[in-house]
Length: 138
Image 1 (cartoon, rainbow, N blue to C red):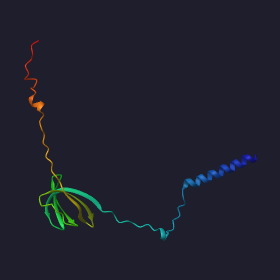
Image 2: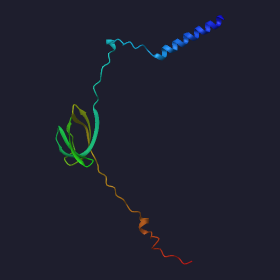
Image 3: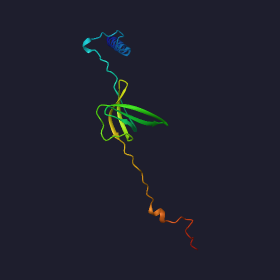
């Protein structure tokens, strides 16, 4: 009988421990510790890139025109340093950041337009079509 009472007491104790654990920690507000204060980081700059044609360029800014869904728009970028070998009328890719409402170009690279040249196969030119081949008598 004594063992049965001990087992029942252990069961009740363990059940109460699990019941408290399921409820989770107490809902009392945590006290703020000034040594562990959480600092809020400012939003990161947005990194974006576009491709378009240079309309105007200077040492401090570049003006690029691009077409999106049939609509033409002109975008202005501030330059940290002058860009060499880029002239008005060139097709370029501009990587930029949006800082404080301004577009700041981080990288301006020319886009090389590649022409695709398709060569016809010599087999297709010399092979007669089935309609042109004479049928052999059997």
